[in-house]
Amino acid sequence: MVDSYRNFLITGCWLSSILTVLFLAAGCSTTSNSTLDTETIDNSDTSSSQLIDPEVSPIPVTEVDSNQNTETPDSDVSASSQLIDPEVSPIPVTEITWTSCYQVYECGDLEVPLDYANPSGESINIGLIRISASVSPSLGPLLINFGGPGASGTELVYAYGSMWEYSFPEFDVIGFDPRGVGQSTQVNCPNDLDDDTEWILEDGEDVEDLFTEARLHVKECLDMSGDLAFHVGTNNVARDMDQIRLALGQEQITYLGYSYGTRIGAVYASLFPDHVRAMILDGAVAPSEQISAFSPVQGLGFENAWNRFAKSCDEDTNCILNQFGGAENAFSIADELLSESNLNVSVSYLGAMDGRELTRSEFQIGTASALYSPGTWPALINSFQNIITSADGSLHQFFADQLVGRNEDGTYDNSQSVLFLVRCADDPLRPSDEEIASAMDAVADQLPHFGPSFRGNTGCAGLDEALDPLHVGQADLDVPALVISMEGDPATPIEWGPDLVESMGNAVLITSDGEGHTAFLTNSECVTDVVFDYLLELTVPENGWSCQEP
Image (cartoon, rainbow, N blue to C red):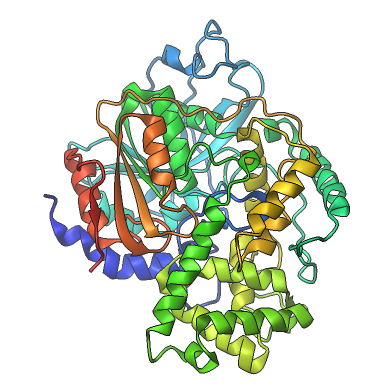
């Protein structure tokens, strides 16, 4: 077994800092003025329901030419999709433009095809950061994706560089921004979110105007993003990963994907199985989980997380919500207050006050955000007390702001744009407006706390059919992929774990009874020990292995 000293991170500075700055739902904002423990890794997929992971702020990258070694591209790159002719010429591999950054790391830039079916056509850039291994010989590159879609790998690897150095001295840790994100060529949609506008619908409300607005929004997205909007899907992100591998001159990579990052990993494993040394997929997303599937599973995951939070509070005699009759009663009181009027925001944790108010939709979304980690539960309890006793929605506003990517100056990052366009690029179906509205209404009816947030989902209305929909096939890996799920995970429910394992074939599932979104180095000490053994020694646990948190 790997030395357990590495696991100090789970109870030490890694957990507390990653919850504070990383992700209330999937990314982070390093400009936050808050000192609360309030964030977690990525979330998963909910399209316009907004129950997702916010993206981190971009970081500056400077460039110089390097003499990076490369290897000849593999033929499987050109055959990686039914929509790509296997007879096309091999994808040309460009060198990574590396330069020293942040004094001790390297930042880079790699040119890749916009459309792998036309590799000699337009190109885009992929932003990278590298923390070199301190152990020789090393185990090669470890590529990390933090989910979203929309989380920046360059930002999160940089922000927690010392943690990666300590945890993975045997690897060259590589963070990359998927196409559309951060330091890579970006997609954009209008994102001047109106604080006073409700994002939710009640049962029976007319949705015609909602779909009209959705189509106008899509048109603006396409005008702002150009052809990249049609090529940001997960299949292309996986192909970009293999271009990174080739540019690094490596035969194999090790991969760590959180939440939506598990979907990227599964696609990569099915397209390029020979180039995987080991693969950790933490916070599994089922391949069948598409917008057009109209599945209630993720919504039920948030309901499950709320129920576990409420039970924990109700059983704690010191939980201040018991003075209001318990957590469930506190939610009802707060929700009723916000049904009558917006609440004052007296403190802005992300600057730019401008007379802001907390709406009922932001209250529901903020509650969901705070369920991503038990580390945020105390702040959530305090926020309910503030709403009920002082009509102050400041903390809930902070939770919601983090989720939708608000910056300190009052602007918003493009994480919502990425989320929407990637999910629709992956989805092969385009149901009618009537089918979407009816299906989402049925989903919302199953979600007593978060239903209205799902009812306003307009899916991919207004977008043409996907050019290259998601493909996850059987993965003929030398070492089985390690898939991880948590019983209390709100964003990637434990039910998705077996689905991902079945779709990949050569994979094993391990689980924990713990709370929060994702496990490794975040919310599970017992899982983290097993993952280190797998990562460093390629020790594969038995499929179905499970543990209880201390």
